[in-house]
Every structure is written in structure tokens, then in C-alpha cells.
Image (cartoon, rainbow, N blue to C red; front, side, top):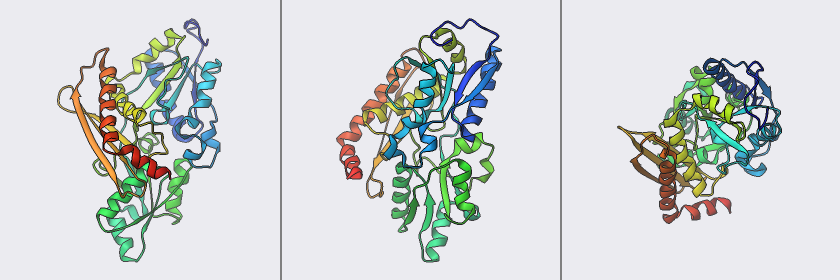
Length: 332
């Protein structure tokens, strides 16, 4: 079917997904929606990516692309018909031969704390400071580490961040076993797994801005299969697509991947006003640059172009303010 018009209306569509419980849950949600809007059956095809089997830090194995390259290969080779990704895992460069067919409505973009005794961040840090030690918080994200350190330093405390990898069960298990006092996870993933009740506290974006695209999904298929792309477009949510386009344009302009402490969130204000916030800093939290930009955007065929322009403009301001120097300091 790869590269051909959608002809066999009886055959199930093959949806490629990573094997993790979260990826399968997300893909299952999309599969049900595709069946609902098209009447076509969908079968999941589980694919192991390099990011799933490697235990090294993401920065050491190539960043976000390690979770999507195997799925993209399967698409181009015709082994699957379309793929579902966490949008924050997608490299910002457009892939040859593939198209982003749909970006469904975004889930909660915030980060969430799962902590011992269900404490919020302030209560956890203050309780352990009283016991004479720093809170041990697990996260594999330099973005989260930078903002956690900045928050703690502003309050005269310190936190001890520990790099972690693994699925949601593994990460939360570090808290249950007492190895860590808390872990930080994406609220969207916990919601999609039906585990929102395990969240101790949600980070306000003012305290911790999320990763570009966090909470959103990306549905890809081959550019040649215009028939399938047209069907999948029924799942597209224009306000989400435009918002994440602004965030990813900022990320691309900063030439930063997941190894750099960069955060961004675009939100719709009254009417058609899009507000984009961005953060760049050092992992130790000693310096954080936070800026915002906004502009009116009408949801028409030029909306993504205007959103990307907003992202590029904010990136230019951050770079003028020293963002490139901060990211260079992190790398040294």
C-alpha cells in the first residue's frame, strides 16, 4: 500500500507504534478514533526503537530521533501504513517522503510530580531540608533539571536530581522503593495510562515550562499516500497543530535538541491571540532566560507559517540575550 492510493477499503490499516505501555495506549486511542471517523479497522504493529533498548542518556545516543527512526523506516519500507509518535520526540527537521497527517487535540502539557507520601514540591523539599538532606528527584530531562534547580535556589534550598530512564512503572517504582523521593513525568502520559490519581502535584508552567510539543501526538504517513493522509486529517486539531508549530520553530531556531535545557509552550488567549513562552538556561539553574511573544493568528491555511514566524522571532530575542552562550556553557 505504501506510495499507492488507498484502494483496499476492507484491509485493516497497520498502525506502527513503540512497544511501551504508554505508546501502545496512545496508539490504541488513535486507532479507535481512526476507525470511528473512517470505518476502517486498524491493527497495531509494535516496533522496537533504539531509544527503547538503550539505557544510555538520550544526549549520548542522538536525542529525540532515537524513538522515531525505526517507525519512519517501517513507513518508508511499506511495513506499516501510518505511525503515532509523542510529538515532543519528533526531530524538528522535516523527513523526506513523510507527511505529518494529523496532530490531534493536545492533552495536559504540564509536568507532574509523583512524590513520597503524596507531597507537593515545596512540602517535600522543606520536609527533607528539615531532616538535613536534599530531596532526591528523578528526571532524565536537562530542561526539568534546570528549572528544578532554579526553583530550589530561589527558595534557599537544594534538590538532588538523578538521571533516570525507563517506562512509567520503572520510574514510579523508584519512589515506591524509597530509592528516590520523587520523579517528574509528563502529566499527559499518566492521564493516558489512567494513572492520574498517582500525581502528587502538577507544575504550573510559570514554575516549569514543558518541552516543545509535550502532551501532543503526531500521526505520520507517507507523502505518496494522499488518500490515507486525507483520511487521517479528520483527526487534526488546528489550534493544537498551530501552537506546537510555534514551539517547534523556536526549538529549531535555537538549534537545540532534548539534550539542551530548552522549554516552550504556546497557548491561545482571547480570540485568536497566540502567546508563546520560551526558556533557555543552564542545567544547574544558575541562569534562566525566560521570554514571551504573542501575536494574532487566524486559523487558516497560513496559520502555521505565522506561528513559525512567531517562534523564530522569539528565538532571535533569546539568542540576542545570550541563549547560545548559556547552551555552550552547559555543553562544556
